[in-house]
Image (cartoon, rainbow, N blue to C red; front, side):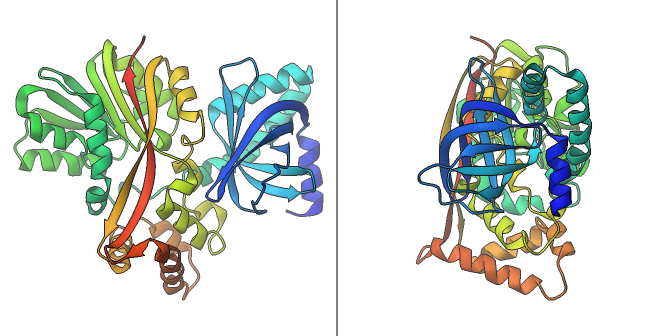
Length: 401
């Protein structure tokens, strides 16, 4: 950003004094400090005494609003570091955080006209952020290949099923079921003693899942092409609802959870898994590190979005906003296991999980990507092979207290 552009941006967004606790998290650690001021474009906070972060690295800023059971979560980069202060530039902010921030700014500005001008300026930047936040893999394109990852994700499915505690006669919904897991595993175990519906926003994924059900002669499970934000089911249609690594990837996570809450029976139960913080998801962090200086920002691996509900309080907050009140959240660790780095890399390439990034690379860079990831993975290699720990958050409970 040029100096003139930076000055223009500062004029667009009025900063509001803001005395609150804030937490910054990244792949390198977590730091807490006092927030000094906040705007629709970034924040200024006191520099923590133990600060070891770096300018330009991706961070998540989490702010709990004093006196309110709401929080603001912002993906950001460090714009500047001074002796006693750290300046952050917002790179993405979710819809609910924008709403909370808008309310706060409106109360403090006392100038509706100025607020509207700031929101107009924010709209231009957030159209770009939306494009960047949705730089996920083309799930439809990789549907036939995604099952290469299922053995690695199986422990998460087992944890979800244990928390769900399905019973004979249950009617169950698996949201963002992808190619059918963990719904198919449950269907195989319990047979026709229950009914299961799986949904996913990527139609090719749904077709793969339905094909499996047909091949295995599982008539009590079926899959539908459907976005989580608009579930085409009656209120209270399901006894149990589960979702593995889907909520944080919804177009609108809060709306998706509200729909899940709506279609769950009053006495129903749910289990949801989301990825934790960036530093606890090594494979995605490695991808971000090796591509960030080689491809445009809109092609970066979606580390911030994938881990957007892993920040402290983020999952609890959004579940409560969606209407859930009776639940617990616990962190769990599981391992990706491969005989060697070569075996891991074969699946990365065969699954096309990073095709978007590969297509954006300059000629001759592909081999360098492999070399750089291998260097990052070296610390996880032993005589037992390549073992990579990952952390996820498991929310489980009932619809209401």
